[in-house]
Length: 237
Ligand SMILES: C[S@@+](CC[C@H](N)C(=O)[O-])C[C@H]1O[C@@H](n2cnc3c(N)ncnc32)[C@H](O)[C@@H]1O
Image (tube, rainbow, N blue to C red):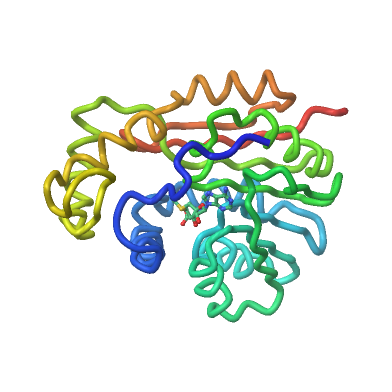
């Protein structure tokens, strides 16, 4: 399986402050109208005792929401960052499992036909070559199950730099060292590093890719200048 091209994947700050940033920005990144589409399409119609996975779950907030919608669900969050998983565990969700895993690593597997829903939120853009991961997800989903991808899509360079500048000022990017530079030398340097990875796909590319990799896209939309969601099901194998 390919390794994510941005190993830390974090725009600003230490692992702990990144976790904070993911927690604080959760509602802004995915507004209520998108959450309710996901709930209505993917969570509420599920049969009894569904199993819902979140790859790159971060502090676990989406899975908490799933358990409020479906008290009978078992939810499993995967992340490689122990700080994120510790925060998720502190949510105290009895039907949750939090698993440390390198989702880009060669030992990452999921049991076949075991999941009703697999989500990747602000995670898919990390992969230089996402085909092996998509193959794993396709096999792990039950027939009719849902793959949900939410996250970054291509935006213009000025729009991206402007958003990162705004986030950087809010999150204290100036204090983040970037290789080869002294702290504070160039607050824009991190945004330039991230541009290629975060701007990898258009929504049309994601639709095309999923179709080619054995999924049927049921619904997708770009809901802001930077973010889109896609809901897809695996084709019969
Ligand atoms: C941008 S955060 C998004 C977190 C969460 N999905 C959300 O939207 O709030 C990306 C998450 O992916 C995790 N991550 C990045 N690469 C990973 C990998 N190879 N394996 C497992 N987790 C990874 C990071 O630790 C981080 O928690």
